[in-house]
Image 1 (cartoon, rainbow, N blue to C red):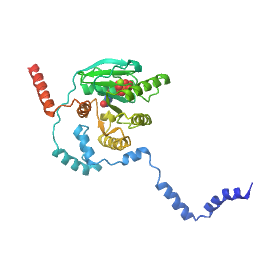
Image 2: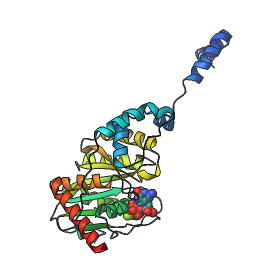
Image 3: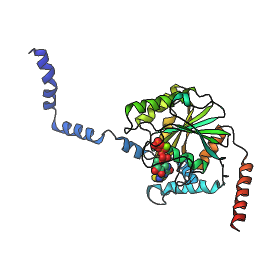
Image 4: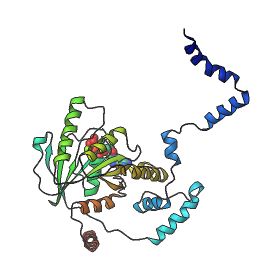
Length: 309
Ligand SMILES: Nc1nc2c(ncn2[C@@H]2O[C@H](COP(=O)(O)OP(=O)(O)OP(=O)(O)O)[C@@H](O)[C@H]2O)c(=O)[nH]1
Ligand SMILES: [Mg+2]
């Protein structure tokens, strides 16, 4: 063996052996005290601002605990809450009706009215969200992932269309089927001129996964406008939800074609659903004045009371 090789191998070891013990200990503690933080630890270190907590409280995702590390924040949040106590009208959707299903690109119906589509991993709650938005039970939902297996087109009072899509990123459907669904969805989303917005649903408990990031990148590359929607927000506590929201807000900033806002919803408790309804109506160009919705709600309430009498 050459002397150069011997020197390269042994020099660092000899140097370490000659290092004073005090230095060795200091170096060891330095390495120990600066460990690489795990993603969970980084997530838990996020400190959402009082305005984020106010927003979530206003949407109905619970109240901040009045004790512990959030006590100081609570005062700010309650002050903000008192200042802005305005009641939103109910932005009702017209009747939701199924009118077409497509398993292959050629069976996609013709372009007519504006459309919005819901995509996301399987079982995140896309179909449930469409039901919650339309206050109906037209769309079939299930505990088991993989129920929606084609593009389902729902007409909303013939004013606009909502498209429910199969889930992506799951292991229980065979590779061929998965590829076909992906091609079908991509063809639809990249070629549809009436498609105004793709709502990408993300489970609030899990956040953005690799499959979601790939999907968002594909949308961005094809210049498809999209917005991220956090679903099942009732299943996590308020501080975790606030951190998740904060993280996603910074994530969506990386995409040129993303709406720089993240919607938060729970189809189970209806929190945030009315706000998303308003967003959709605005997107498809059907949002009327607040007065219209207030009057409509009052008329419906009066009708219901009449019926009860
Ligand atoms: N707690 C809670 N459960 C929800 C919510 N939304 C949906 N779920 C439940 O999640 C499960 C899946 O809901 P679906 O709406 O069928 O999900 P999907 O994304 O359409 O699923 P695929 O069609 O398989 O892609 C059902 O058991 C729903 O009851 C929510 O906001 N909160
Ligand atoms: Mg579904």
